[in-house]
Length: 395
Image 1: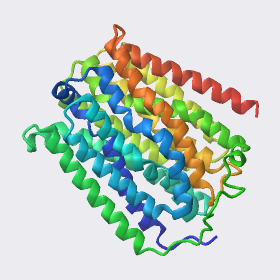
Image 2 (image 1 turned 180 degrees about the vertical axis):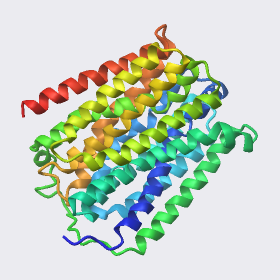
Image 3 (image 1 turned 90 degrees about the vertical axis):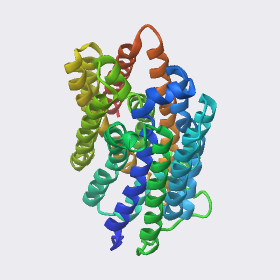
Image 4 (image 1 turned 45 degrees about the vertical axis):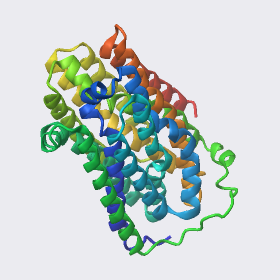
């Protein structure tokens, strides 16, 4: 199959909306303490609200995959961008845990259309294997870039600019998400598309049972829960964890978290280029182990070691792209059924995405505090590393 001439330009447009996706995931994190106080939420109930979009993902992600296979990434990413902008705007008006849960949940209605589209887009628009790995390295950093920008600027720039109104900050972020969605629509509409057969009904190759016959697909699905649990339990809570365990101010904690995010972006951009089929599992296992080490350092360390540990935990940035590569290169995943495969993968993963932030919040509310939460995540990472290595050796 010939590579479409505008593939890199369209990829950048997709990166913009995916960055807005990362903004939506991270938007509340730097302001979490203020938001909790304003709406009267405990850490446990706030963790429940933070995981609302992931809960909705469980049900909408498989449908999103089928939508992408049927109608393509153009409409999918545009609708997803609208969901991001709408959710951010709704959060600005939340005045209780329930209304915040509903506002965050809105992101999960069409949000899967964004997260499931990049792997499908790369499968269809980048038939060359080397180019495909580079494209994965580019798009996977998009949500991290969006998150880092939010974490780095919220307390130091945005809140002071908007007179410390967290609601005004969310309104501004909603406007930016809408602008990036419009830019995507224009970019995609003016590009030359590849000729990809899109089934009108569930084809033999796209049937879930057919996909599950692949050992690569089964491995990716088995990893999904932990990968998402880890990322979602740490993502929205990291600023608060650094603030609590390190004794830093919200602004300083945000800056250290942003630095870790920048390190994660570099990891996400570089690692996929080395992740050929012979290395991908080894790199994944190493990522889990390094993550666990960083979490333990943060859990038991002084303020300095909390910072060091937080930066080391940036290794988690490699987990999603490496698992996606395992899925994309599985023998039964084709351009025609890539949407379904990624939709099912995200649905399974978001079970971990729901329980991650909730578990961290509940543990933080207990006598174990954030120290206990970090150790639980570290133990899960080590167990998954061991299980993955044993599973692949026995294949």
